[in-house]
Image (cartoon, rainbow, N blue to C red; front, side):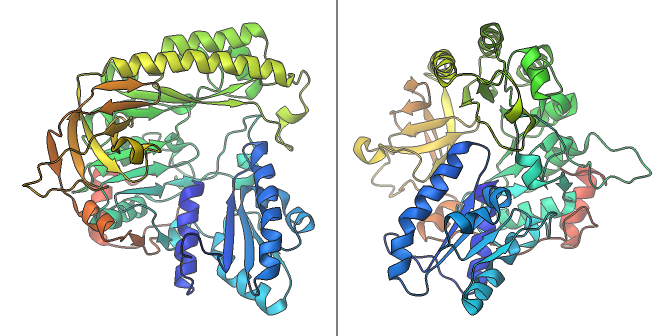
Length: 492
């Protein structure tokens, strides 16, 4: 979500006349788009601002802006700790950045503007995309859940959904510029439709499944992903939509957080481990080769060794492809921050290490089972840190796995493989976090996305729709497609 917000900020600044600084040069403007989910974000921001202070002092006219969740949380504290910052803006008014920068220049004084509710849905702002072949599309912002460890609802606000026609129009606009893959974004994607439902009618709980199916009608869209759903609202119609819509990838990221029912209750997560495992079972029955990933928090206040063992038991049963694992971090303003029995760092670290060891073994076994299979890869740019040394390139399989491969081509054909192209190849090796494919390329398809990447062109999407659950405005053909495939109440 923050990456996509940064694309919006880039689009706004380009429209205002700014040009991206050349890598390695000192910029005239530095914008920090911050996160506040974990404490280390605070430390990184203020440490980096400190490093920039002497650079700014020597560069006349240089400006620094801080936005995003940490800015929404800290507000005036940012300029108190770093008085050389020019602009502070929140999660609800990213569209104000160019005006605030100009005002700071004119007034020669820091501008702090934090508003409490969404000023405009991000889709109403231009976006300068980072990738020629893959794009983010927000279907909602905010969250209506009240997890005791999470600060996001306080900083992003209540859930606000886009109309399906606006979502599909943005997807269509990306595809027309060569994009092959989109990821639908929402804090809780499967609650989609809650904020634009007719007050006189019950909410259509099948709205997200209908939206997924509607993406199958967009010609040229080869891959659809989404993140993140909530287990409490994960319904069978979403599984069916994933299974029957060809361009929806066999990949599911669903946060577990804890395998202990007692801890889940304390976290205010409205599901229990049996329900979570039941969803996993249904997904694998419909899509046997689906890659399932998750989030897990270790060391939540009051977590006992028995609770932690319950988490390990669920991990063993679920056999996740991979897991994003976190040590619990106190977030001021959340209920969990003042709970008793906060765990010592050494206890949390020891449990964290055990979880990592178990999950890495499961990930390795799952990846080793794929050796000898054929995978279709969307070639990625910069996805392999060691590619220069190993003479490999990298790509993502349809299930989201990272694959490093040898770009062997027939010199006579002159068919250089580029990021954005599609290749198929056999898997020859495995590690916990990636696959290796060092055999010959079986097929290679050059794409418009590859052409665009080669030319250094990335999509730029203009403002689409009016957002905020209001009726759609825009290309009638796309809206009609949405109505046919998604239904009038379909949304995120």
